[in-house]
Length: 399
Ligand SMILES: Cc1ncc(COP(=O)(O)O)c(C=O)c1O
Image 1: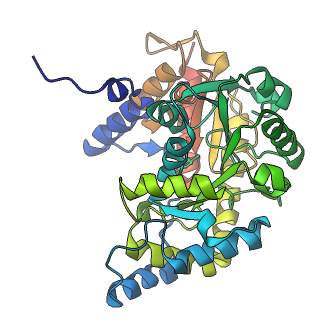
Image 2: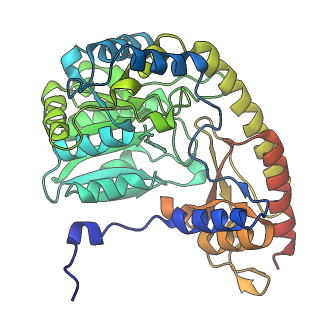
Protein backbone atom coordinates (compact mmCIF):
# COMPACT_ATOMS: atom_id res chain seq x y z
CA UNK A 1 0.00 0.00 0.00
CA UNK A 2 1.36 3.44 -0.97
CA UNK A 3 1.97 5.95 1.82
CA UNK A 4 -0.78 8.52 1.30
CA UNK A 5 -0.63 12.23 0.57
CA UNK A 6 -2.42 14.89 2.59
CA UNK A 7 -6.16 15.53 2.31
CA UNK A 8 -5.27 19.15 1.59
CA UNK A 9 -3.38 18.22 -1.57
CA UNK A 10 -5.71 15.43 -2.58
CA UNK A 11 -8.59 17.89 -2.59
CA UNK A 12 -6.93 20.35 -4.96
CA UNK A 13 -8.96 20.38 -8.16
CA UNK A 14 -6.87 19.46 -11.20
CA UNK A 15 -6.70 22.36 -13.62
CA UNK A 16 -9.40 21.92 -16.27
CA UNK A 17 -7.27 23.94 -18.65
CA UNK A 18 -4.41 21.49 -18.35
CA UNK A 19 -6.08 18.72 -20.38
CA UNK A 20 -6.69 21.05 -23.35
CA UNK A 21 -3.23 22.55 -23.00
CA UNK A 22 -1.40 19.22 -23.00
CA UNK A 23 -3.47 17.96 -25.96
CA UNK A 24 -2.67 21.20 -27.87
CA UNK A 25 1.04 20.66 -27.16
CA UNK A 26 0.76 17.03 -28.34
CA UNK A 27 -0.87 18.13 -31.61
CA UNK A 28 1.79 20.81 -32.14
CA UNK A 29 4.53 18.25 -31.54
CA UNK A 30 2.93 16.20 -34.32
CA UNK A 31 3.56 19.17 -36.62
CA UNK A 32 -0.05 20.40 -36.70
CA UNK A 33 -0.83 24.10 -36.89
CA UNK A 34 -2.63 24.74 -33.60
CA UNK A 35 -3.87 28.27 -32.86
CA UNK A 36 -3.80 28.90 -29.11
CA UNK A 37 -6.23 31.29 -27.44
CA UNK A 38 -5.32 30.04 -23.98
CA UNK A 39 -2.38 32.30 -23.10
CA UNK A 40 -2.50 34.11 -19.77
CA UNK A 41 0.50 36.27 -20.58
CA UNK A 42 1.48 39.01 -23.02
CA UNK A 43 3.19 37.56 -26.10
CA UNK A 44 5.64 40.52 -26.28
CA UNK A 45 9.21 40.18 -25.06
CA UNK A 46 10.27 42.02 -21.88
CA UNK A 47 11.44 45.54 -22.88
CA UNK A 48 15.19 45.89 -23.41
CA UNK A 49 15.78 48.45 -20.65
CA UNK A 50 14.47 45.90 -18.15
CA UNK A 51 16.61 43.07 -19.49
CA UNK A 52 19.64 45.39 -19.37
CA UNK A 53 18.85 46.13 -15.73
CA UNK A 54 18.95 42.40 -14.96
CA UNK A 55 22.38 42.14 -16.60
CA UNK A 56 23.54 45.13 -14.55
CA UNK A 57 22.26 43.42 -11.39
CA UNK A 58 24.35 40.34 -12.16
CA UNK A 59 27.45 42.41 -12.91
CA UNK A 60 26.98 44.39 -9.70
CA UNK A 61 26.84 41.14 -7.70
CA UNK A 62 23.22 41.47 -6.59
CA UNK A 63 23.13 37.72 -6.21
CA UNK A 64 22.64 37.32 -2.47
CA UNK A 65 19.63 37.01 -0.17
CA UNK A 66 17.72 40.27 0.16
CA UNK A 67 15.44 41.28 3.04
CA UNK A 68 12.44 38.90 3.08
CA UNK A 69 9.93 41.65 2.22
CA UNK A 70 12.06 42.95 -0.66
CA UNK A 71 14.90 45.36 -1.35
CA UNK A 72 14.69 48.96 -0.23
CA UNK A 73 15.22 49.95 -3.88
CA UNK A 74 12.20 48.02 -5.17
CA UNK A 75 9.95 48.81 -2.23
CA UNK A 76 10.69 52.52 -2.69
CA UNK A 77 9.68 52.30 -6.37
CA UNK A 78 6.49 50.43 -5.43
CA UNK A 79 5.74 53.05 -2.79
CA UNK A 80 6.16 55.80 -5.43
CA UNK A 81 4.04 53.88 -7.96
CA UNK A 82 1.15 53.37 -5.54
CA UNK A 83 1.11 57.09 -4.80
CA UNK A 84 1.54 58.20 -8.43
CA UNK A 85 -0.94 55.81 -10.06
CA UNK A 86 -3.40 55.02 -7.32
CA UNK A 87 -3.25 57.95 -4.90
CA UNK A 88 -2.28 55.53 -2.13
CA UNK A 89 0.17 56.46 0.59
CA UNK A 90 2.00 53.57 2.26
CA UNK A 91 5.02 53.33 4.51
CA UNK A 92 7.74 50.94 3.38
CA UNK A 93 6.76 48.55 6.17
CA UNK A 94 3.26 48.31 4.62
CA UNK A 95 4.71 46.76 1.46
CA UNK A 96 5.96 43.25 0.66
CA UNK A 97 7.57 41.88 -2.51
CA UNK A 98 6.77 38.26 -3.35
CA UNK A 99 7.48 35.68 -6.02
CA UNK A 100 4.68 36.84 -8.32
CA UNK A 101 1.26 38.21 -7.48
CA UNK A 102 0.26 34.60 -6.96
CA UNK A 103 2.49 34.28 -3.92
CA UNK A 104 1.19 37.61 -2.59
CA UNK A 105 -2.34 36.22 -2.77
CA UNK A 106 -1.44 32.98 -1.05
CA UNK A 107 0.59 34.79 1.63
CA UNK A 108 -2.32 37.16 2.23
CA UNK A 109 -4.87 34.35 2.56
CA UNK A 110 -2.54 32.40 4.82
CA UNK A 111 -2.04 35.50 6.97
CA UNK A 112 -5.73 36.22 7.53
CA UNK A 113 -7.67 32.95 7.40
CA UNK A 114 -8.53 30.60 10.24
CA UNK A 115 -10.01 27.18 9.44
CA UNK A 116 -13.58 27.58 8.18
CA UNK A 117 -13.35 31.32 7.47
CA UNK A 118 -15.33 32.23 4.37
CA UNK A 119 -14.03 34.23 1.43
CA UNK A 120 -16.42 35.83 -1.04
CA UNK A 121 -15.39 35.50 -4.67
CA UNK A 122 -17.50 37.08 -7.41
CA UNK A 123 -17.64 34.60 -10.30
CA UNK A 124 -16.73 33.85 -13.05
CA UNK A 125 -13.39 34.03 -11.30
CA UNK A 126 -9.77 33.15 -11.87
CA UNK A 127 -9.31 29.43 -11.17
CA UNK A 128 -6.65 29.87 -8.53
CA UNK A 129 -8.72 31.93 -6.05
CA UNK A 130 -10.99 29.14 -4.75
CA UNK A 131 -8.11 26.68 -4.66
CA UNK A 132 -5.85 29.06 -2.74
CA UNK A 133 -8.61 29.81 -0.24
CA UNK A 134 -9.13 26.07 0.35
CA UNK A 135 -5.42 25.34 0.68
CA UNK A 136 -5.16 28.15 3.23
CA UNK A 137 -7.93 26.46 5.26
CA UNK A 138 -10.78 28.77 4.25
CA UNK A 139 -14.05 28.19 2.44
CA UNK A 140 -14.52 29.83 -0.95
CA UNK A 141 -18.00 31.28 -1.47
CA UNK A 142 -18.59 31.90 -5.16
CA UNK A 143 -21.15 34.59 -5.93
CA UNK A 144 -22.23 34.21 -9.51
CA UNK A 145 -22.71 37.08 -11.93
CA UNK A 146 -24.04 37.01 -15.47
CA UNK A 147 -23.24 38.59 -18.80
CA UNK A 148 -26.42 40.70 -18.86
CA UNK A 149 -25.14 42.50 -15.73
CA UNK A 150 -21.72 43.00 -17.27
CA UNK A 151 -20.34 40.10 -15.20
CA UNK A 152 -20.62 42.13 -12.02
CA UNK A 153 -22.29 41.23 -8.75
CA UNK A 154 -24.31 43.94 -6.99
CA UNK A 155 -23.41 44.85 -3.42
CA UNK A 156 -26.89 43.66 -2.36
CA UNK A 157 -26.30 40.24 -3.89
CA UNK A 158 -22.88 40.08 -2.25
CA UNK A 159 -24.39 41.00 1.11
CA UNK A 160 -26.81 38.06 0.84
CA UNK A 161 -23.75 35.79 1.05
CA UNK A 162 -22.16 37.50 4.06
CA UNK A 163 -22.20 35.41 7.25
CA UNK A 164 -20.47 35.77 10.63
CA UNK A 165 -17.68 33.65 9.12
CA UNK A 166 -16.99 36.02 6.21
CA UNK A 167 -13.38 37.08 6.52
CA UNK A 168 -12.57 38.52 3.10
CA UNK A 169 -13.73 39.44 -0.38
CA UNK A 170 -11.47 38.91 -3.38
CA UNK A 171 -11.86 41.51 -6.12
CA UNK A 172 -10.16 41.38 -9.48
CA UNK A 173 -10.52 44.44 -11.68
CA UNK A 174 -9.75 44.37 -14.60
CA UNK A 175 -10.97 40.82 -14.50
CA UNK A 176 -9.67 37.48 -15.63
CA UNK A 177 -11.66 35.86 -17.29
CA UNK A 178 -14.43 38.36 -18.08
CA UNK A 179 -12.47 41.52 -18.96
CA UNK A 180 -14.87 43.48 -16.76
CA UNK A 181 -13.63 46.67 -15.04
CA UNK A 182 -15.41 47.63 -11.81
CA UNK A 183 -16.80 51.17 -11.61
CA UNK A 184 -15.97 53.57 -8.80
CA UNK A 185 -19.63 53.47 -7.70
CA UNK A 186 -19.69 49.69 -7.39
CA UNK A 187 -16.33 49.67 -5.62
CA UNK A 188 -17.69 52.25 -3.17
CA UNK A 189 -20.71 50.02 -2.50
CA UNK A 190 -18.39 47.04 -1.90
CA UNK A 191 -16.21 49.18 0.36
CA UNK A 192 -19.24 50.22 2.44
CA UNK A 193 -20.21 46.56 2.76
CA UNK A 194 -16.72 45.51 3.86
CA UNK A 195 -16.59 48.28 6.46
CA UNK A 196 -20.12 47.51 7.72
CA UNK A 197 -19.43 43.78 8.11
CA UNK A 198 -15.73 44.11 8.98
CA UNK A 199 -14.08 41.84 6.46
CA UNK A 200 -10.89 42.28 4.46
CA UNK A 201 -10.80 43.08 0.76
CA UNK A 202 -8.06 41.46 -1.28
CA UNK A 203 -7.87 43.61 -4.38
CA UNK A 204 -6.02 41.90 -7.21
CA UNK A 205 -5.04 44.74 -9.55
CA UNK A 206 -2.57 42.82 -11.72
CA UNK A 207 -4.28 43.92 -14.99
CA UNK A 208 -4.44 47.58 -13.92
CA UNK A 209 -2.52 48.86 -16.93
CA UNK A 210 -4.74 47.06 -19.43
CA UNK A 211 -7.88 49.18 -19.55
CA UNK A 212 -9.28 50.24 -22.93
CA UNK A 213 -11.13 53.19 -24.44
CA UNK A 214 -9.77 55.73 -21.97
CA UNK A 215 -11.18 53.92 -18.92
CA UNK A 216 -9.46 54.53 -15.60
CA UNK A 217 -8.47 52.03 -12.94
CA UNK A 218 -9.69 52.72 -9.43
CA UNK A 219 -8.18 50.93 -6.45
CA UNK A 220 -10.82 50.24 -3.80
CA UNK A 221 -8.19 51.12 -1.18
CA UNK A 222 -8.22 54.72 -2.44
CA UNK A 223 -11.89 55.22 -1.51
CA UNK A 224 -11.34 56.22 2.10
CA UNK A 225 -9.23 55.58 5.20
CA UNK A 226 -11.56 52.95 6.63
CA UNK A 227 -11.53 50.73 3.56
CA UNK A 228 -7.80 51.30 3.03
CA UNK A 229 -7.19 49.89 6.53
CA UNK A 230 -9.04 46.69 5.50
CA UNK A 231 -7.64 46.26 2.00
CA UNK A 232 -4.68 44.27 0.80
CA UNK A 233 -3.74 45.59 -2.64
CA UNK A 234 -2.08 43.02 -4.88
CA UNK A 235 -0.17 43.96 -8.01
CA UNK A 236 2.99 43.07 -9.90
CA UNK A 237 5.02 43.50 -13.04
CA UNK A 238 4.01 40.27 -14.82
CA UNK A 239 1.27 41.54 -17.09
CA UNK A 240 2.07 45.26 -17.44
CA UNK A 241 5.76 44.88 -18.31
CA UNK A 242 5.61 41.47 -20.05
CA UNK A 243 7.59 39.96 -17.16
CA UNK A 244 5.59 36.82 -16.33
CA UNK A 245 8.67 34.63 -16.02
CA UNK A 246 10.52 37.01 -13.69
CA UNK A 247 8.12 36.31 -10.82
CA UNK A 248 7.80 39.64 -9.08
CA UNK A 249 4.57 40.67 -7.40
CA UNK A 250 3.85 42.97 -4.50
CA UNK A 251 1.24 43.66 -1.87
CA UNK A 252 0.45 46.71 0.24
CA UNK A 253 -1.89 46.76 3.18
CA UNK A 254 -2.41 46.98 6.92
CA UNK A 255 0.88 46.77 8.82
CA UNK A 256 -0.09 43.69 10.88
CA UNK A 257 -1.16 41.77 7.77
CA UNK A 258 2.01 42.64 5.85
CA UNK A 259 4.04 41.66 8.89
CA UNK A 260 2.27 38.29 9.08
CA UNK A 261 2.74 37.77 5.34
CA UNK A 262 6.44 38.50 5.77
CA UNK A 263 6.80 35.98 8.63
CA UNK A 264 4.98 33.39 6.56
CA UNK A 265 7.20 34.03 3.53
CA UNK A 266 10.34 33.99 5.67
CA UNK A 267 9.75 30.29 6.33
CA UNK A 268 8.59 29.32 2.85
CA UNK A 269 10.52 31.03 0.04
CA UNK A 270 12.42 33.90 1.76
CA UNK A 271 12.93 36.81 -0.63
CA UNK A 272 11.89 37.05 -4.28
CA UNK A 273 14.72 36.67 -6.81
CA UNK A 274 17.35 39.39 -6.21
CA UNK A 275 18.12 40.02 -9.89
CA UNK A 276 14.46 40.21 -10.84
CA UNK A 277 13.86 42.63 -7.95
CA UNK A 278 16.41 45.07 -9.38
CA UNK A 279 14.95 44.67 -12.89
CA UNK A 280 11.42 45.25 -11.55
CA UNK A 281 12.56 48.41 -9.76
CA UNK A 282 13.94 49.75 -13.03
CA UNK A 283 10.79 48.61 -14.89
CA UNK A 284 8.63 50.71 -12.57
CA UNK A 285 10.65 53.87 -13.24
CA UNK A 286 10.09 53.96 -16.96
CA UNK A 287 7.48 51.84 -18.72
CA UNK A 288 4.93 54.33 -19.99
CA UNK A 289 5.89 54.09 -23.67
CA UNK A 290 5.96 50.29 -23.68
CA UNK A 291 2.63 50.09 -21.87
CA UNK A 292 1.04 52.61 -24.24
CA UNK A 293 2.20 50.63 -27.26
CA UNK A 294 1.05 47.31 -25.87
CA UNK A 295 -2.32 48.81 -24.93
CA UNK A 296 -2.76 50.05 -28.51
CA UNK A 297 -1.91 46.61 -29.88
CA UNK A 298 -4.23 44.84 -27.44
CA UNK A 299 -7.02 47.28 -28.37
CA UNK A 300 -6.65 46.42 -32.08
CA UNK A 301 -6.63 42.69 -31.32
CA UNK A 302 -9.65 42.98 -29.05
CA UNK A 303 -11.61 44.85 -31.71
CA UNK A 304 -10.78 42.30 -34.42
CA UNK A 305 -11.76 39.39 -32.19
CA UNK A 306 -14.95 41.05 -30.98
CA UNK A 307 -16.14 41.98 -34.50
CA UNK A 308 -15.35 38.59 -35.95
CA UNK A 309 -17.07 36.67 -33.14
CA UNK A 310 -20.21 38.75 -33.23
CA UNK A 311 -20.54 38.22 -36.98
CA UNK A 312 -20.79 34.43 -36.43
CA UNK A 313 -24.36 33.13 -36.21
CA UNK A 314 -24.77 31.24 -32.93
CA UNK A 315 -21.89 32.89 -31.04
CA UNK A 316 -21.55 36.17 -29.21
CA UNK A 317 -19.36 38.01 -26.74
CA UNK A 318 -19.50 41.25 -24.81
CA UNK A 319 -16.85 43.91 -25.35
CA UNK A 320 -14.27 43.55 -22.58
CA UNK A 321 -13.18 46.81 -20.95
CA UNK A 322 -9.87 45.49 -19.66
CA UNK A 323 -7.29 42.65 -19.36
CA UNK A 324 -6.84 40.50 -22.51
CA UNK A 325 -9.60 37.94 -22.26
CA UNK A 326 -13.00 37.53 -23.85
CA UNK A 327 -15.86 35.28 -22.76
CA UNK A 328 -17.30 33.55 -25.80
CA UNK A 329 -20.96 32.71 -25.23
CA UNK A 330 -21.56 29.19 -26.54
CA UNK A 331 -24.97 28.63 -24.91
CA UNK A 332 -26.82 28.34 -28.24
CA UNK A 333 -24.60 25.38 -29.20
CA UNK A 334 -25.19 23.37 -26.02
CA UNK A 335 -27.13 20.24 -26.93
CA UNK A 336 -26.01 20.35 -30.58
CA UNK A 337 -23.68 17.76 -32.13
CA UNK A 338 -20.49 17.93 -34.11
CA UNK A 339 -18.80 14.92 -35.73
CA UNK A 340 -21.31 12.68 -33.95
CA UNK A 341 -20.50 14.06 -30.49
CA UNK A 342 -22.93 16.08 -28.40
CA UNK A 343 -21.75 19.37 -26.92
CA UNK A 344 -22.94 19.19 -23.32
CA UNK A 345 -20.84 22.04 -22.00
CA UNK A 346 -17.66 24.07 -22.37
CA UNK A 347 -15.31 21.08 -21.99
CA UNK A 348 -17.00 19.31 -24.91
CA UNK A 349 -16.93 22.48 -27.00
CA UNK A 350 -13.23 23.09 -26.32
CA UNK A 351 -12.32 19.42 -26.89
CA UNK A 352 -14.21 19.13 -30.19
CA UNK A 353 -12.90 22.49 -31.45
CA UNK A 354 -9.33 21.46 -30.78
CA UNK A 355 -9.68 18.04 -32.42
CA UNK A 356 -11.46 19.22 -35.53
CA UNK A 357 -10.12 22.75 -36.13
CA UNK A 358 -6.86 22.89 -34.17
CA UNK A 359 -7.97 25.86 -32.05
CA UNK A 360 -7.30 25.79 -28.29
CA UNK A 361 -9.65 27.70 -25.97
CA UNK A 362 -10.20 27.46 -22.20
CA UNK A 363 -13.50 25.92 -21.02
CA UNK A 364 -15.08 28.43 -18.65
CA UNK A 365 -16.46 25.66 -16.43
CA UNK A 366 -13.08 26.17 -14.76
CA UNK A 367 -14.10 29.75 -13.97
CA UNK A 368 -17.59 28.84 -12.80
CA UNK A 369 -19.75 29.13 -15.97
CA UNK A 370 -20.20 26.25 -18.39
CA UNK A 371 -21.95 28.39 -21.06
CA UNK A 372 -18.70 30.06 -22.06
CA UNK A 373 -15.16 29.45 -23.20
CA UNK A 374 -12.41 31.99 -22.51
CA UNK A 375 -10.37 33.37 -25.36
CA UNK A 376 -7.16 35.27 -24.76
CA UNK A 377 -6.17 37.86 -27.36
CA UNK A 378 -2.56 37.91 -26.19
CA UNK A 379 -1.59 36.59 -29.60
CA UNK A 380 -0.99 38.13 -33.02
CA UNK A 381 -3.70 39.71 -35.17
CA UNK A 382 -2.96 37.17 -37.92
CA UNK A 383 -3.53 34.26 -35.56
CA UNK A 384 -6.73 35.84 -34.26
CA UNK A 385 -8.09 36.12 -37.81
CA UNK A 386 -7.19 32.53 -38.71
CA UNK A 387 -8.36 31.12 -35.36
CA UNK A 388 -11.75 32.86 -35.32
CA UNK A 389 -12.35 31.90 -38.97
CA UNK A 390 -11.80 28.30 -37.95
CA UNK A 391 -14.24 28.72 -35.06
CA UNK A 392 -16.82 30.05 -37.58
CA UNK A 393 -16.36 26.91 -39.71
CA UNK A 394 -16.73 24.76 -36.58
CA UNK A 395 -20.00 26.44 -35.62
CA UNK A 396 -21.39 25.84 -39.14
CA UNK A 397 -20.74 22.13 -38.65
CA UNK A 398 -22.69 21.99 -35.38
CA UNK A 399 -26.19 20.69 -35.90
C1 LIG B 1 -6.15 37.47 -11.91
C2 LIG B 1 -4.74 37.07 -11.79
N1 LIG B 1 -4.09 37.34 -10.66
C3 LIG B 1 -2.79 36.97 -10.49
C4 LIG B 1 -2.12 36.32 -11.49
C5 LIG B 1 -0.69 35.88 -11.23
O1 LIG B 1 0.23 36.85 -11.48
P1 LIG B 1 1.79 36.53 -11.28
O2 LIG B 1 2.29 36.01 -12.58
O3 LIG B 1 2.40 37.86 -10.93
O4 LIG B 1 1.92 35.55 -10.20
C6 LIG B 1 -2.76 36.02 -12.69
C7 LIG B 1 -2.05 35.28 -13.76
O5 LIG B 1 -2.61 34.72 -14.66
C8 LIG B 1 -4.09 36.41 -12.85
O6 LIG B 1 -4.77 36.16 -13.98
